[in-house]
Image (cartoon, rainbow, N blue to C red; front, side, top):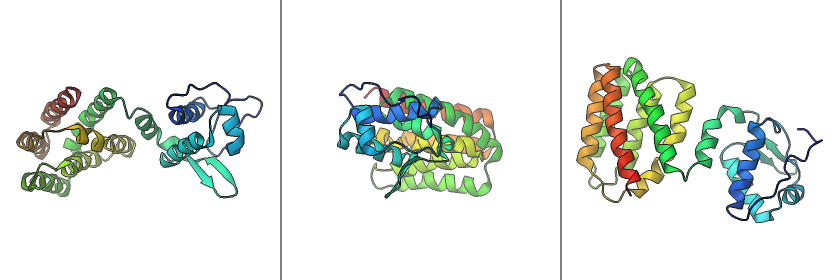
Length: 228
């Protein structure tokens, strides 16, 4: 870490202070001023440099730890994780969690690509799991089927068998619970209809039809969420 510059020093507004501290650390990482393995200054020094209180700083550090950006070691200090660069998309999702339009669009962009790859790579076993997730929705005694909906999309993401984009879609699906909680009126029959259409396209190993049916489904979800 470059000690010749006070890279932390910059005034922060009082709004969402802990989030701004998180964004500052992430910015320093992206710009290369902080690097994997670097040790952060002691807590008191960070509080002074950032102009925030101990509770604000600790909340920010907890968020960074949850995002696996830092590791806090007892009696040894706080370090930037060595593998932090492997999960940049998770960081961006966490920082943009309130921007629903951007998250939904990012999810569409990724899932539409993933489903076309899945059409070429999905195994018979994964197709069976996909159908079982649809059956779980059908047999759900109430409309609380969000977990099975998430499972459906995750199976497709994993069947694309690409570890780089797989990490991205898993991160996006972490937002599923949030968007799911916003929906007051569920339309199970439509969800089942859309999922079955995607399943049938994948069963035929048809990338174009898989793309078409996934777009139909995700666009429906987008319009429903953004109209709330």
